[in-house]
Length: 195
Image 1: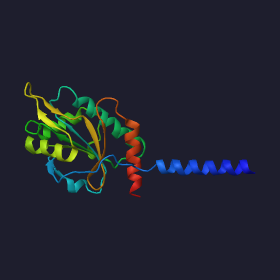
Image 2: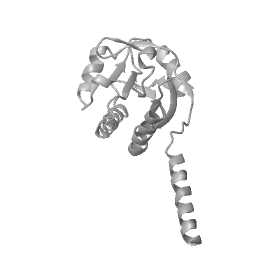
Image 3: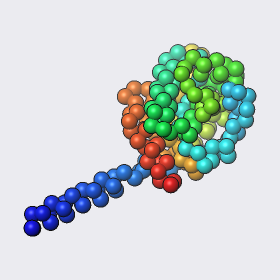
Image 4: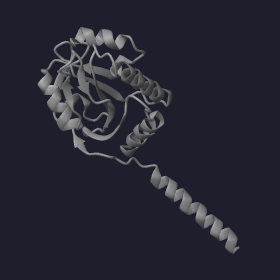
């Protein structure tokens, strides 16, 4: 009888422990400052449009010769995995770090090379480079800088998970060793935390 009670007790403790582990835990609490920019369809998109939505952000530019193509491919893979899990209401936002070159048409052409659902994906431009340098540093804690030796722009390669209040709650490698399963799991847990 005692053994049976101990077994039931330990099972209950394990279930409670595992249930406790299935809550979303933020790594950061960085408030994204207000913005209104232009997307690849020449529509204005701002922080207000994203309030009440969960979104994943990154920084790219269309003439990038190194990190941007694999990052964009990796983000399309995350979008597909989320859709396979029945989650199709997550927004994706790619900020151009070369806005003077990246017109809406160029951004539209760039994303058309990938299997992305652009109904949920805004590629943003329509600002001075100083503006994106400042937004990246203040809101996402990442540096954006011109490369003095080329026409390329140096920028971070992370993906940023932003909650419904417009706060960056986690960031992940977006280039190598992308933690796909962790990102999908975190999105599901974050969504569940609002239910």
